[in-house]
Length: 64
Image (cartoon, rainbow, N blue to C red; front, side, top):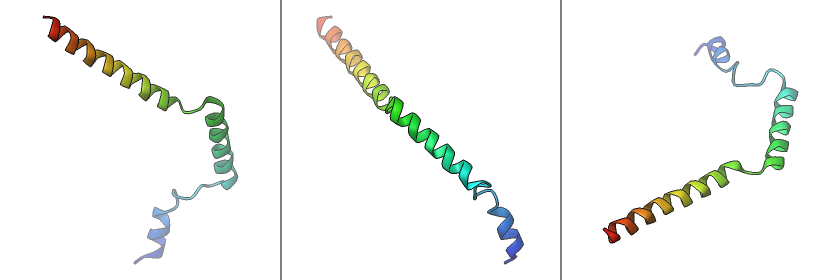
């Protein structure tokens, strides 16, 4: 194998500045701690909406 070709392919896999990668990680971690997990609440509310719609369809099918 050609070592130069292998190194050219992996040049984008390493961060250019490791301190910027750490700063980005710290920023995202702090934001997650402040806001919590918004996707969990979104999933729970979507599940409740779907259960309500299914219950409404079942209720309407029994009435009519």
